[in-house]
Image (cartoon, rainbow, N blue to C red; front, side, top):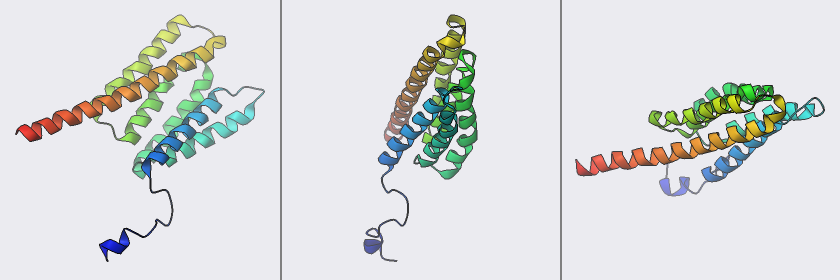
Length: 169
């Protein structure tokens, strides 16, 4: 086994670059959830293609295989549950929890799951009927994206704090 030649051998399968996998995987997950959420009686093919795209997206993300497999079924069900209307916007919390697990965020950052849950409560109070489902989906999406960014920021803060303890000790 020669280290100099082994690093030059191209991979037999898959992508070598994780940022592209992350971007494309996230895009495919979002398109899958969006297609599922926007399906109706007149566009049932969105319901057929949405979960398929979402599953492919979760499997494309760069992470340990067990993490991607653990979140696959709950997140697929959460994407389908969003079809039920404004009462089920809390399903965004399941999608965010799946994202946090796949990205390997620290346990302390899971407090951001309160954002989509709070948005769900607010949506239930303010919006009452199915005609306002698109607005509810937008609010849930904003809360979920904000939670994901806050978790990433929290991970950086926790990492900096841990690094500072090691350096000063």
